Each structure stands twice: as structure tokens, then as C-alpha cells.
Image 1 (cartoon, rainbow, N blue to C red):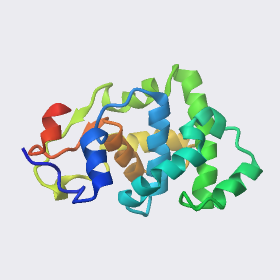
Image 2 (tube, rainbow, N blue to C red):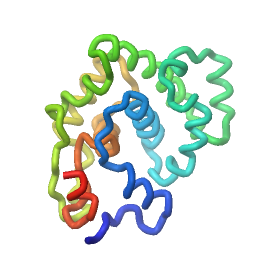
Image 3 (cartoon, one colour):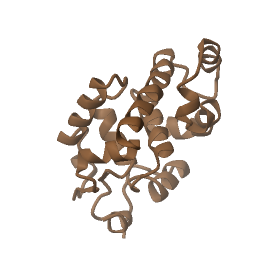
Length: 186
């Protein structure tokens, strides 16, 4: 079988496609990692984010939302000056704010995983695209997710970012039907 074409020949993108993209996530730390990366990806290519992923991991304490929620102004300035990440002050501040909101959802639902999977009925939505240009930028589920996250105070969670997150975290299977990963994740 073939593979989705979007990774092209980029080794990082191929590895991400083959091992991570679309694999259902049920670990809150991994959920937060994808939320951080997808927020920073807004307006940029995913290839850039993957290139800087280890830098993000080091700068943001392995994506430990409990630590991130307590970041102070000194830490924010360190992040703004860290060339290993995307140095967007608005996004950096949003991630810290979102970590605090993430903890509130955990408290309410027992886990972020329990909260986030409600948007797809607690199972992966199986799409059946045959061409890359069929993949949508949003869905009714990502619109609902975005509205609820915004209502809860999250930032950088528009419906397009939420859909990219859903693809990454396996809430939706958007591998092409001709891709070898489609059946693995179906």
C-alpha cells in the first residue's frame, strides 16, 4: 500500500506520519504536548514545528502542564529569548494560561482525556478520504471543541487548530484510504 503524500521526503515528517499522526492518545501529558505544538504551528508549517520539537520539549519542561501552569515572568522572558522554540510572546503566554485551564478540566472530569474524547463520542471518527485535497480544515466536532475550550478560557484553540489537534491525537483518522496506516488505525 501507499502512504499519505503530505510528508513528502522529509524524514521527520515521515516518522511522524508513520508512528504518531492519528494514533489515539489517552495520556494527558501527550494531549497537552499536541495542544502546545498545534498552537505554535498556527501560521507556520508542521515541518518547522517538528524541527523544533525537542527545543519545545526542553523549554517547556517535557510539556508538564503542572509545571507550566506555575511559570512566572522570569520564565516567560527566558522562553521569549530561547532560539530553540518559536519565540512568539502571545503564544508563550497562552500556553501557560492553557496549562492552568487544563488543570481545571482535569479536576472537573478526572482527566483531560475524559473531557476531550466526548467530542467524538469517545471513539475515533473514521473518515474515508482518497485525495489530500479532500481533508477538511475543520469539522462540526472541531467547531464544538473550539467553542467549549474558548468558553473555558483557552487561547489559540480555533476550530482549525482543534481539527489539527484531533488529527494528531487520533480523535479523527484522516489517513487516506490508500495509506497503509489507514487500516492500522481503523
